[in-house]
Amino acid sequence: MSRRIMVAGNWKMNGSNESIASLLAGIKAGMDAADKTTVVVCPPMIYIHKVQELTAGTAISVGAQNLSVETSGAFTGEMSSAMLMDNGCTYVIVGHSERRALYHESDMLVAQKYGVARAGGLIPILCIGETLEEREAGITEQVVGRQLDAVIAMEGVKALADGVIAYEPVWAIGTGKTASPQQAQDVHAFIRSRIAEIDAGVAEKVQILYGGSVKGSNAVELFANEDIDGGLIGGASLDAEDFLAICTAAN
Ligand code: PEP
Image (cartoon, rainbow, N blue to C red; front, top):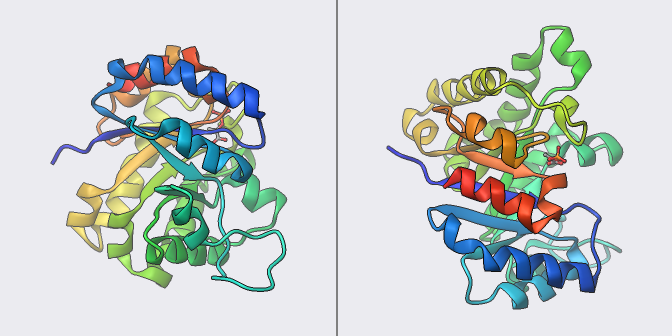
């Protein structure tokens, strides 16, 4: 089975009404070169509606960077899956390492978010990855396996077929240090084989993106690997030319 390639931009807490309009104009202008790639942008919550309007009628999909596990009510500052759907989101990132580290999101909470997103009709992008300390201690597979198992335990392995996995080594995020194509491929193959031990069909189908300092210059080499189905892009997704270079590489 050949899996479709995906490039998703995580804008994090960046942008303004003005910069977002110009970023999207730039991306839209170059989308013809990315016709075989699923292109997703994940703006800050407050700009989701605007981005949805600006991308209407294009092949660009919109994703959120987070969601609540609650459905409605007295949860100040939170956003439900229904609200994201209501505003044109197709995807939602869950378990980004910044949320795990800075907002203390546990494997269990991330698994819950994965389930809530899926139940609400969104496609969750599940981020997993080890820190530098964990890599140096030789426990990368243990950590990534544990993060993945939390979702499988709570939602069942079939739930993974409705989402996307992003392997993001924490030491490569925003640092300019990219995992080598071989390092990335090794962990992607491990993730796929761990899923295959339970359900080979799901393992074959699930898209596994790589994230961590992906640029136009290293994207081709990374995406050429058998188990790497595209990228989750932080810094380089804030510049239309850089982001398009990655989308073109994916194509
Ligand atoms: C990210 O935060 O998901 C990410 C991959 O960031 P960067 O591309 O900047 O390393």
